[in-house]
Length: 192
Ligand code: VGL
Ligand code: ZN
Image: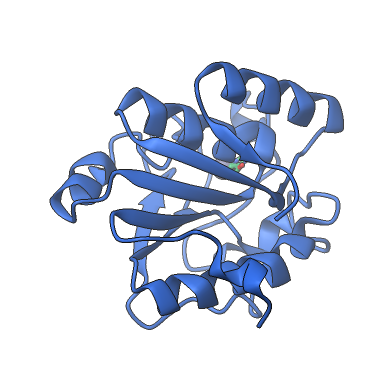
């Protein structure tokens, strides 16, 4: 393992892997270009997290059939991440630890939840584990990663966005997301 993989992780940190699910990867129902390329990058960070003994949280989009966010209901998205479906599973090569803490979202019938903090209790759970800084990567940069990183800042966490560990639905929106997140005080790691 290279020294790069020490990654500066320390006690009080958590790694937050956002929605690295089959449906967001090539071949999936809402495929993001190069979405699967975040997996090897995140695997390095997962190894570093294990070494540093910091907790790993993995969020997942977990929609009921006919979710309000689907085009059939007037929403913006094709059906994706249906509960218990193959598409909703984490990418098979993502090396999540045994003790990963899963954060399930997108289950509400009446609204979507892009942020892993949105009505999940995640902020309190992080605080209960004395986490003050979160390292964030996953899918998609301009949708759930952006919303999650923003809300983490709103809750007062320091936020490190691992740029190489995320991909956008739209390149232009991805760039806008990076700008907005920087304005919010998110530290963007460009070369990790
Ligand atoms: C997401 C679109 C719809 C995401 C979730 O995880 O970024 N994007 N639902
Ligand atoms: Zn969704």
